[in-house]
Image (cartoon, rainbow, N blue to C red; front, side, top):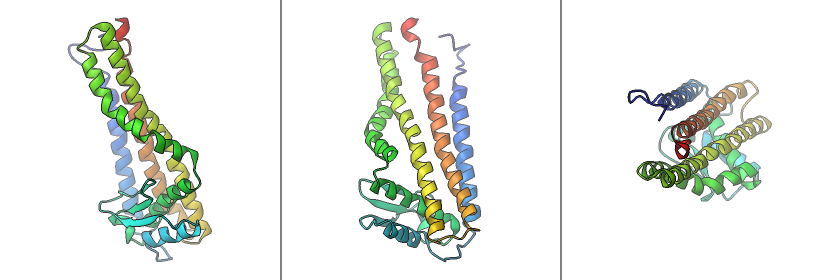
Length: 235
């Protein structure tokens, strides 16, 4: 292949760039959260209490708030209708914790309102998971077949991986919308004051950038696959 020089694969830099982007985003969200987790909200509400109030005000009574282990492992499960808050959020009264809890409530409200990007993301989860699982095996197996058969398998692998990329891209509007809903609700209901909202906004913005980083890394990996194998059937 023309991309190799004495066994060196220059396209691997795309993987390194993606990994660095993700590491920077992860470090930023952790440092931002840790900073604003020191700011106690004036309302004194914990993340769990704020979440319960937001859900009730939205007319959502069939979602269970659960305490899960870990740090920033918070998530909303639409199939089980559970809002899972981590150790650093569930009992914390910080503006950071309240913001994260409100963000997860934003997903529950999206679910209730049949927000299309969330519905689409939920629908493609099985395809994205299957694509991620099959992509590299198909590509590696394709390398051992003749040109035509190998090219078909490799291209199928690239297509499978593209489903995972699509999932990452669809996730972006879901996360940004949930954060926007959270900030609006926190302000409207007076859970956080006008002086506290900017702090929470910084936390949610940093968290959103981790999804942007993941999408960028996935796109770079897909680009690498295309550069390495996309022209195999023309060799």
